Image 1 (cartoon, helix red, strand yellow):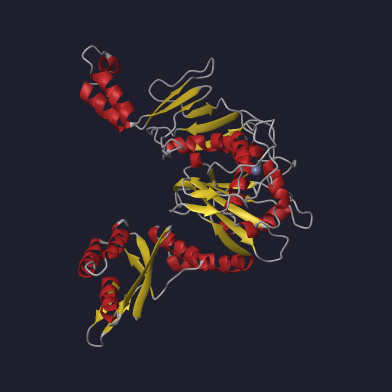
Image 2 (cartoon, protein in one colour; image 1 turned 90 degrees about the horizontal axis):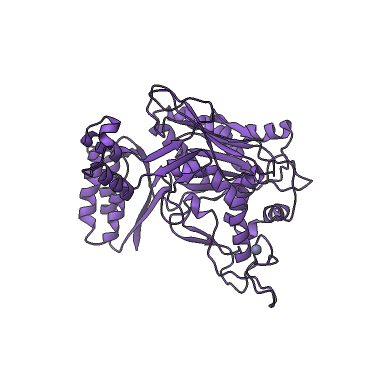
Length: 482
Ligand SMILES: [Zn+2]
């Protein structure tokens, strides 16, 4: 049996293809190579192929013809067509002949190349700068995590053998029968990362029902509040598959779903309504404007303050009803991180698991680096864990990278081990950050999430003047009042 294989790669999307044939796969190899050829030399019978491809109508046409030829023998080949069809014109992807798998390191490098190419930057320059740092970084770290597209389970499969990685089966469910001996149960499906942050696929076997309930009422509730505005503004679907509206202390954000808009339009167009006249628009124009809206925001100004005549205020401090504990937000990030690591790789995090589970108190934590950028925008939460494989105790045992909408948070997963650095002093933190993969990008802010106390939480929405209030133009910041 002869075969030919290749990989198509673009960021989070990867397609592996292998063609087998008794009579050889030379024809198949030639045909697919012709699709991706950058130049042909018929005289010397040579084809030049670039691994980095640019999406175009001509390329899609060639792939379509190719797929038409081969779909009779294997209909799954349509996957190649749909992979290429999804890529907008002018953007890039990779065709990697003979490859069957890519290492995490290769994927990171290819992703950087794609980001630089898509942004029109000098690819070689970007790669050189990154490579210098990356080679060194990956001598010390291995990649884990990343949210899969298909449903994936982590940890022990058998319910009988399961040990909750957080409480070691010691937490008692508040609804358990006090007359019976307390027993750990694993009836519920525990999401490694909150469903409210858009994760539907990653399930952790080793989280008991009592811990599941405990986390949902403590740290996960806090991170949900902290990230809630971003989730709503970017229309992330929650547990009930809906975009959530928010009612705060001094504001209300209402998501205008299709149903809701239809109701508003029916009311506006009702024969008795005065709405268009009051607003001063003709009914057609008013209907058009309503259809174009995603949200309605109402905001109550503080006493004594007056709003501008013809536009919303430039700064809108959205005050939440829920109080927020910064340390619980940090804990949630670490809880998510420790949920996506395989059981056998959890050594070194014993004290961390105790802290997350609530049985260990901590007063000071390293700062969290936060960046807002659309470059790696992701609607559902994405989490990557960098686990240290070297013995260098001046570097963190693990680092987490959470991407949610346009916010990236890089956090140290603390080990609370005295033999390791704790990254609380500026010097230790600087040593870590100088080493990090992310420091070549500008614009990070470093925030302290140590405080365990519950504080008032304000999400600052800044609407630039002379611009319509629009999510992508609005500059925002989360402030936890002390
Ligand atoms: Zn438990």
